[in-house]
Image (cartoon, rainbow, N blue to C red; front, side):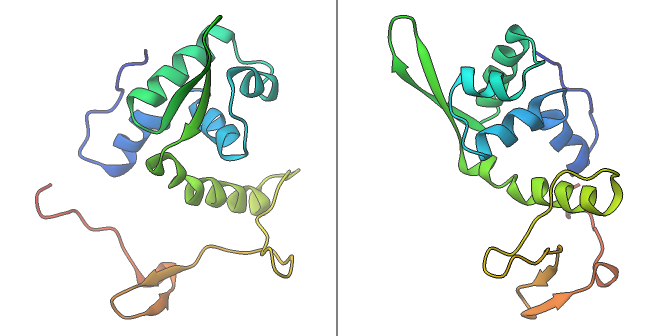
Length: 146
């Protein structure tokens, strides 16, 4: 297992401790896209070594981003799915796709509005004021106990 790399009081550093190692985000993305079994994930990520996929799946389960259920006893085979914590990464994936559609050449994906097919963008929202907020109108602050 990969050891935790960052010992910083920082949300980004601590999130990278969970999902920042090679292949983890891609494995989680495959699960988000509906792949459920080891073989389905391995086929989609064709260059991932089998032992590394196995290690990453165990680690993601330990970190409660995914859960597994046995669907065949002999040999044992598991079905994987995202937990609620793992599903919450969809915003991160969409942000990466949106960033890539703006800055990668070539770009391979875009996030679109299902109803009309237009490209969408990220928007911040303040539930207290019930208003949209520009990215220039918000900032990151430490929590009181940090």
